Amino acid sequence: ESLVYLAQEEKLAFDVYTALAAETGIRQFSNISRSEARHMAAVERLLAKYGVANPLDDLAPGEFSDPVLQDLYYDLLESATDYSNAIQVGVDIETLDISDLDKMLDKKMPKDVRNVLKNLLNGSYQHLAAFSR
Image (cartoon, rainbow, N blue to C red; front, side):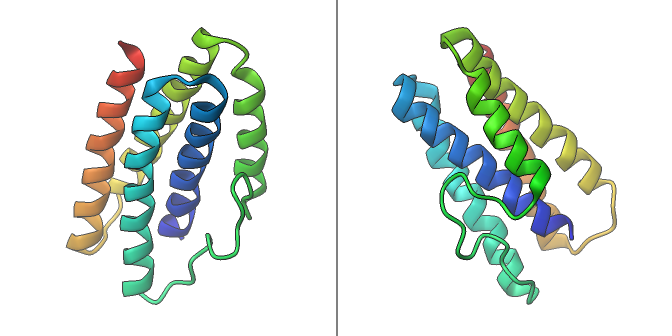
């Protein structure tokens, strides 16, 4: 269940950053969206390994099966009205990722899943730092 949500949350970051990179030309979005693509792939490998259906299959950019994430996607894009607000969107996404990953890491899980989540957490801290500069 956590991996299914996490896959969609990583897709949220990727989709928002990709859209904002195209819309704003802000370098952090294009750079970090590539990293988010790797994060999604890492979670998708875990889903496949553990025989969990991939919630990202057949979803177009900006499309989510989780209604909360769908609404959040629209809200984030709407709030990115200028440079400062767009950067704040990146901060908000990474802060959400960090919070959710911390909660997930409090649970018992296989070592390989824990390692991927720790790597994602480290990446989110790096992304947060890039947006905060």
